[in-house]
Length: 198
Image (tube, rainbow, N blue to C red; front, side):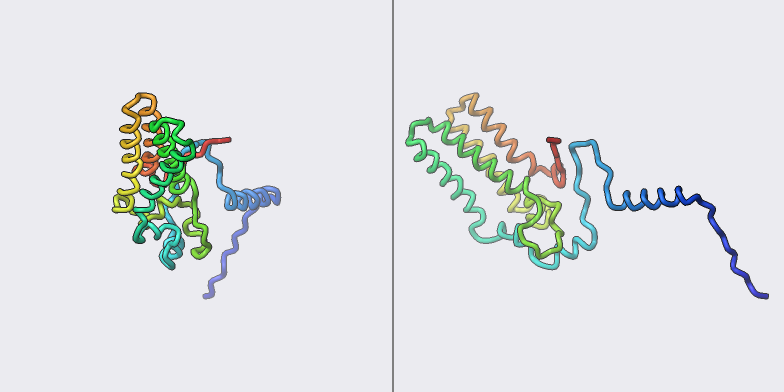
């Protein structure tokens, strides 16, 4: 006894099959837009993890080098000296420390939390969705490097508040700058993106 194959045919109209092909191709290529301004970056795929571990991350490994912590102190001292000599002591020391605080916080925010990816193309785009803060120490939280980078804005806030003689206006300005510097470093902000529609 031989078995005969059972033939099944689907009866579709040509228009419905074409529209289903177009819809499937469109949905595979384009992601649906979200109306939320807050999004969360998905974890890496297995291929991205392999690409990340293939070579050292030159973009974030400098934090582990000797003198990496000292450069922040040198930058802050340079900014203080620059603002002191740039204005030839015509402005108060309170404003000089506030400008130093503002310049360091804005620069570090752009460097650590705004720019994504790496300038080097050696890892097949494995870090393209991650900020430098998320790349440092392979994304682990509470490492000594991240604790130090967390404490620097707080220390500048305390110093600038002290030199402002605890003036309320400077306290508020420096406090807001401190929050801008440390809130993106909190664990709840890890892989969190806030995109304002412009």
